[in-house]
Amino acid sequence: MPEVLRTERLTRVFGGLVAVNEVEFAAEEGEIVGLIGPNGAGKTTFFNLVSGALRVSGGRIFFQGREITHAPAYRRAELGIGRTFQVMKPFPRLTVMENVLVGAFLRHPSRLAAERWAAEILKMMGLSEFAAASARSLTTAGRKRLEIARALALNPTLLLLDEVVAGLNPVEAEGTVELIRRIRDRGTTIIMVEHIMRVIMGLSDRIVVLTHGRKIAEGTPPQVASNPDVINAYLGTH
Amino acid sequence: MRRTPPSGSHPATRPRIGAGTSSLTGALVLLALLTFYPAAFPSFITLGVTIVLFAAMASAWDVLGGWTGQLSLGHAVFVGIGAYTMALLVLRNGVAPWWGAMVGMGASVVVAAMWGGVTFRLRGPYFALASIAVAEMTRIVANNWARLTGGAEGISLPTLPLFLGLDLFSRRVEFYMALILLGLALAVAWWLQRSRFGYHLQAIREDEDAAMALGINPTREKVWAFLASAALTSLGGSLYGIFLGFFEPRGMFSLDLSVQLALMAYIGGAGTLFGPLIGAGLLVGGSEVLRIYFPGKSLFVYGVLIILVVLFAPDGLSTAVRRARRA
Picture 1: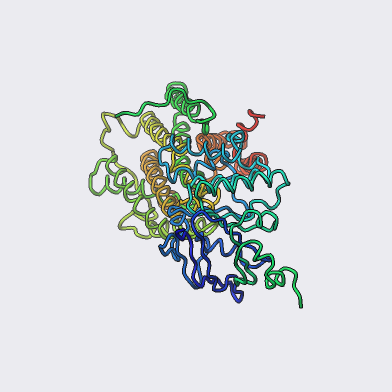
Picture 2: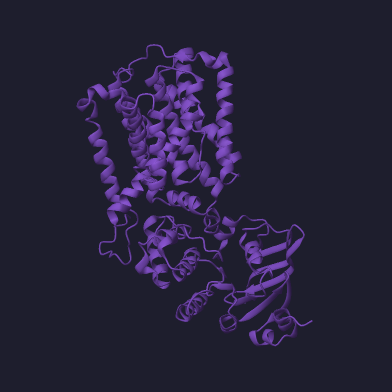
């Protein structure tokens, strides 16, 4: 399988804190990679580095073999990296449809084609009935879906999902899990951060564990779940 | 081969976005009605010119301030450049005022490109603060560079050549010129409401990080919005200069003027088609009425009215009206 994303010694420092510390990471086409770790492990910072929302302090990032370490965020979106934000960022004054349309315009400059594509995405995300509603009127579950819908509108090769299941009720969560599978089945590579172990263990082909910015383990869900370092990091044995 | 529009498009696959056609009809009806204004209210023609001209300039301001969400408190720079470039070319070089207005527009675009290129790296309140600084610097330069601008004494326009047989100092002619400009500004706003570029600007306004994650280059789009806004404002400034006949840097480049344009858009509804127009009507017309009924206290009442609007219609009057109608 061709490699979609690779980071080499990726590092980000905030003042005296090393939030991401020389992380070596790779994702292959069509994979779902789970990124887990205790709070403050650097998962969201890692996403921000890969999507270009934050500048790196050191190391390099490659997307489909091409270096993007210093490319601005919009350029990475053009290349095919879509992301959601953990702290959701809908465009509140626009309708749900328009929110998705903004993303759809990237691949479909004509308005008619962009609208068609956006409508298709809304349908897939189960948001069609809210198309004309303002984005701020959506529930938390709706907003989380909108985050995914907007990123999907880019038709991304790589999708970064930051806690899109946390905070949903069991039925909603099940729906989103199903959606993530379907997105992957369309050929999109997914890297996801999630706190709900049942979800991440069930969905991921591979799991990477971060603690204090460092990668401490990597492997299939069962391998990671039985790794003593991981258990240490989560339960803390001193 | 020409593509035929899909005939059987049903609402599920082709949802309506915004209020495209209805707002276009509204704008056209409004402009058509306004053409009767000079005949209907001949004794209030000066007020009419002021309202329409400020509506046009406030709409121009709104391209950047409302649609893109970049608060400029320095747009008087373009009013001043438009007025001064036109007037100086008329006075010194005998250039016709309409060509002078075109040169002024070009100058404003160049200034906006440099200004935007530097300050759009700043986010949030810093762009607004920088805009005040740029405008104040421009005012001071215009005031002191007397050999170029005539300095603090100001300049007055000589007799102007006829424009297509029309006397530019006639209030009626000025009214229709302002109306054409307003039509142009409304056309731009209508296009922003529905075009790809317009959605890019709105996305930047709503959330710059999310916009970037969707492939939008904020600095580039903001600069384009700024150029369009500056060009339209500059044309308004040239017309404003003709309307006044005499002006000085203190008025043309004033912070007061910049704030007025912003205020009109906000009161009426920034980033809406009719908002700046409503705001201009209310503030220009309102201050006129207040001057008559509350002599000496008009500014106080004006202030109270603005506070009321901000309290009860924080998204502007046009948004409040639309919401009330929907409820």
